[in-house]
Amino acid sequence: MRTSIEGGPTFSHIHADLEPGETIIAEADAMATMAADLDMDAKFNGGFLPGLGKKFLGGESLFVNHFTNNTQETKRVSLVQGTPGEIREVRLDGTKTLCLQPGAYICSTPDVKLGVKWAGFASLLGREGLFKLEVGGTGTLWYGAYGSLIDKEVNGEFIVDTSHLVAYDPQLKLKVQLAGGIFSSFLGGEGLVTRMEGTGRIVIQTRSISGLAGWLNPRL
Image (cartoon, rainbow, N blue to C red; front, top):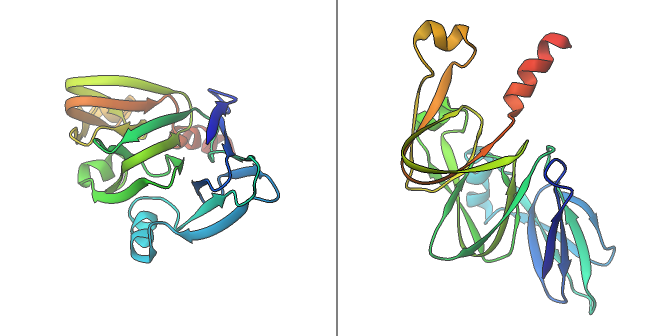
């Protein structure tokens, strides 16, 4: 399988050229274009019960689409995320996992495993949901978010504004707190922030949907 990410960072999209017999799995509604003779099968996201868990707890869709090349020639499928922004490709070797915010997953190769785990009330207050999507296994994962993506190595403590955390190493802990004092936090417009504690890597998005909605609502 040959893949490329184009249009970045603002309007990133994925081209996947599938060799005969190859399959790529994508979030529902991620397909932009595909060769007419590729096969597309909608399946439960990891099975019926795991699929329900990913939909209602992890913020992902109940079904995912399997795009399979059953021809004798290379065929292309192009995949996108629901918002304009950057897309990342991650190679997994079975030795580590990655936690994703709800909605960040776009697509993966078949041996990548998606699971839902308890994230805690701090994650809920930080607008990341009660449960986190944990990705492991072997293969290639593609994820993205609204805006550009920034890497940050955390060694101790680091503060991220709510709705800006995209991905993080599972050993990191999340705590929610006021940005400052009560009056300065809310009068200054910052409110709650997420404190990351431990050692590991996080990925931050430069824009947030909630911020866009807050800017648009008074103008509509």
